Image (cartoon, rainbow, N blue to C red; front, side, top):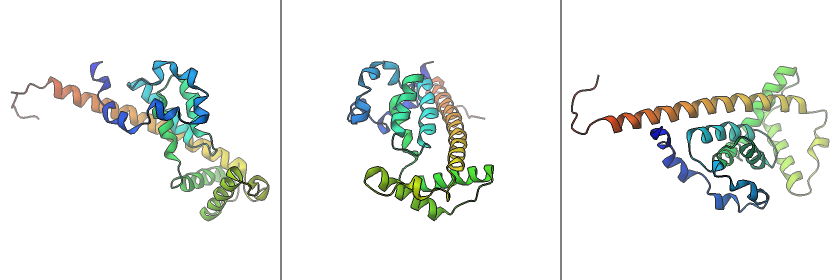
Length: 196
């Protein structure tokens, strides 16, 4: 379908270029696998798969969300820049409410005690210190206080639901923009008849 490529024009400018992606030392290891042109196509199918993969990967609370999105893109032949860009749904601003919502959902499902938003914030800070320097291991510090099971169940449910909703929304928006673009092209310039 000719109109299938219309909505991607602005999207291309927002996403990282292949050169920018390969600047990462970790992602550079995958350079031989990134030669497949399907991983860089800006068509509806490639981008839609990338939405599902990128959003799903964004909810995993570990350094390596981009690596997870890259592996998913390689397996399912999805657009790499889109999948990697969407992992930034969880960032320093959004991670606290997202992780709290995940823990809250999981705690309600397995009937574990719900912890406060401030406590989640302290855990994230402690985990970052531990992962990036020599802070105390939060898995030992918070053992017995926090249910890792509740956190994993809640985040998984939240990730799957958000991924499905975003994927379906992307598909609907793409279809709408394609139809509007097609209708504009079909309309004759001298057609001044009123639209009903």
